[in-house]
Image (cartoon, rainbow, N blue to C red):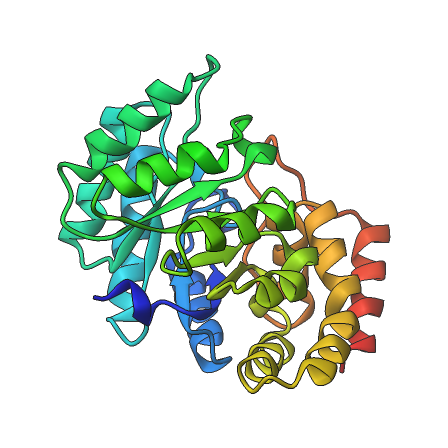
Length: 294
């Protein structure tokens, strides 16, 4: 699949659990169908929203395989394969490739602070042993590692299948610099919900977000307006949904999105500890926000 075909609203999936804390794959299937029916342009499982860091390897593989089977190439699937070690990341990436992923997303994570050279070698080691595109993911808020534009461009220029970047620092200048440094040839994607409109103005090819689990129509309408160059309409649509975007980000994506799914009729269980479910006050506030968006 060409990187150029990955665009638009890229919906994060949740990982549902039952009352005993075990995987609830039927609920995952329902949530995926809701996203596809809602018009997302791609699916991204096992990231922050999908609690990938809190799953056993067996659970991770079960979710990855189930998701890829459920989506069945109707739209692109970008599997988050990040792991503490290079070997673990490569193993997950190859598993995703073998089961039909269109691309993988890699966030460097480490207990020890990684040097630029170590990060570079991490991507090169995975890229040299993989046949599908890699989305480089920069999110210092979760990984503790902030890759400079210089490092990102070094990786992109040296590792052939690192073909796109998800930028989640919230620094819009990073996106402008990526666009400028690549002469507009490097697809980049917004990963910071409150920056979605500015990111599209900067030339982002898509928006990676958990919001379509709750408001797919508004997310899709925003992207349609952007594509049509209807910037006044896009601005209105963005600021209408901004309270929800802020709320789910600040409250923690697994907790808030799972609460929102429950409020809209799909039970997906509580997040896995040490993450906690959204409290009663938060649920009431979320309900009010959703009611305002109807």
